[in-house]
Image (tube, rainbow, N blue to C red):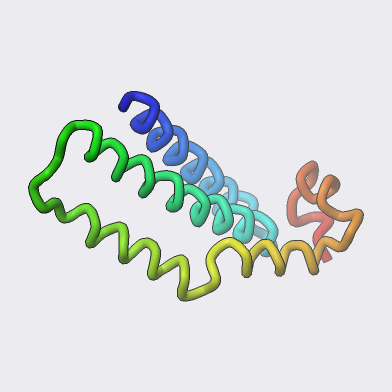
Length: 110
């Protein structure tokens, strides 16, 4: 159960850091796209961990967690989730642009 809680906290920290960078450095779409991808992937990991945690503590009574989970998943599906942003970033960066973009951010993204 502790591992699931750690996953939730780790993903919260990853997304918070990515959002902070996107706000601070988001001159272009690179940081915003990366933050969106990370938030989408974190939603998948966090919802799975939350459900596993509830199951591990023996929650058998009806719990409102599934209402929140369904809304998160619907949000992901509305915009094709991280796939849409990954496609856009890949197209913008080209085959040789990922590493320079990671190093310098939007400054090198066309």
